[in-house]
Length: 308
Image (cartoon, rainbow, N blue to C red; front, side):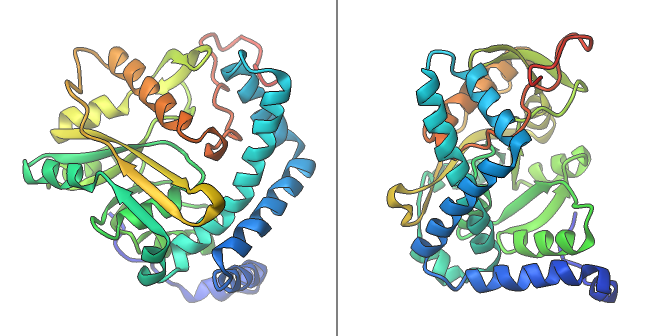
């Protein structure tokens, strides 16, 4: 488990200078009022939508596949809002990594933290069942104000970004575990402790089942929540975060532990998990990460991509 951001003098190599200059600019923006940040983010999001053709196509296609009942105009309106929210998410990450605890507490609200404490007091580990909401980094930082846990993450290929994300995420977590390190996750849950878990992206064919996700009948979905809950003797608690109306702050909601989870088989658990994911996304569809190629893995490898 990673418990400290390791700095190396090699990070000052000239090839990293452009990255450090960008970091300097990012650090400056965390001094701006939140309302200014969100206005800048909204403009950046619209700019990205205009020039990031492939990402725009992916998000538009996801909305079409998931919400065929919506009119094209409604989906296009949701798409524009989603890109605006994506631009704002840049500042969510900046704030999560660099705001002081005092400033975080001035812009946050929490409900349901008692469910976490009750579960830990009963001797069970907590699996926070989250989705890739755009303000998720800030959600973790807020959660860490009352119960630092263990973050599950993917190490970054760029050494500067790896140092920054570890340093930033350790402000709200007591440690970080690679998403491939199942043994360490189980060890943390049996401690007992809190870990983050997401199952709303396409991680390929391995350990996946093809089940409904919104209107798509066959979305590749991992079944790791069942494995973690069984091996870690843990409870699964759905988790939601959003930017509040008017972009005045952030709120998180921790829901009660799921009853009878894990169930009789991992397929039924995964179907139930996707239904919960849909419920969480529906709380604020515009703030979900629709840019991900959620349906890139098809049941038949010879099938044509739904993104072509």
